[in-house]
Length: 436
Picture 1 (cartoon, rainbow, N blue to C red):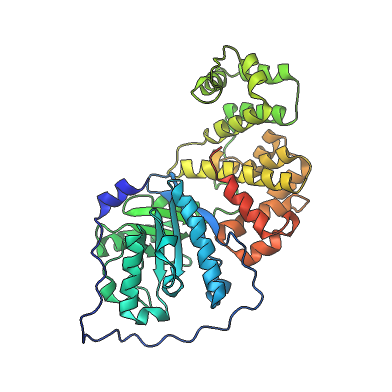
Picture 2: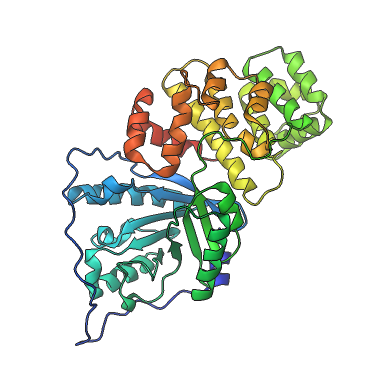
């Protein structure tokens, strides 16, 4: 998906060159010893929470796999090997679906990993550590990764830095800038573009959607930020009539209301009726059948499939914006996540939780207020409470989202208890992003 952008921005750099015999090695002072190993830290089989990556064109380009923050930086020995193996396995699956898979890991974690564990489509940002004092080994690692088809990135200005003998990176991950706003990030991108001409940039520490959308232009290859829970836009607008009709239809479908009422709602919106028939008559939806009426369509397709389709139509009603496609994909993934968690924990009203997941993104997508979204969706009381952060039995669903997006696995571990543990939540999050 990103090959055209990569090829346009730069060609493959030459292989890293070890220093000539007798050459002086790096004078970087020795790094401090690693802190003591974290005792008893549980590593789930799917270690690494995924966060959506947005391309310069505003589309979902892949996922960033986050390795769990400060606690993981203190791992040693077998725990490092287990974490790395699990993370790379998740990345391979993602890359195998034609999506970009990005992660930042200490260089020393990858040194002993067999080449077979890497794959085309993976993008690894190397963090310099004590192992990088061995220049030959560092150059060998970079070359091993590139032989496997991995794009290898690092920040040449980082402290400590990879040795100069490693050559030019394939991309540069830009560091976090605490407190920086959208304007500051745009200026930083311009400075980086001037310093490293034709070098793809990865901005993985952006503070907000607004800052992310401000930098979605080449040479930025990907951007990512934590969207967070449900937040109102600075200037809320009334829901457009077509969105209100779609929400009314979703409620009828989810509450199993009368078939004739569902058909009447669809027929009342000519554009929605046409979209539905076009969708259902398209190849692969109902093979061998051509539908001639809305009544026939509702009977044959079924309510579950129909309300999922209406949800897709609803999020696509959002006004044009730079990251619209990626934000729409996130809304549908959240809806599926909440529904999956509800079904696997035998929670009543999984359809209502599907709506809650969707509702966490509607104010941002449709530029409406939370109260307007709650009223238009006829949400259950516990869903309205959770959106307004007033507690209730469904608050635990909304609280999961920031921890998942931040890759904060220790916090996620505590929040996952009502759902059978972190392993279940991460599995559902992965499944929620699969194509419907």
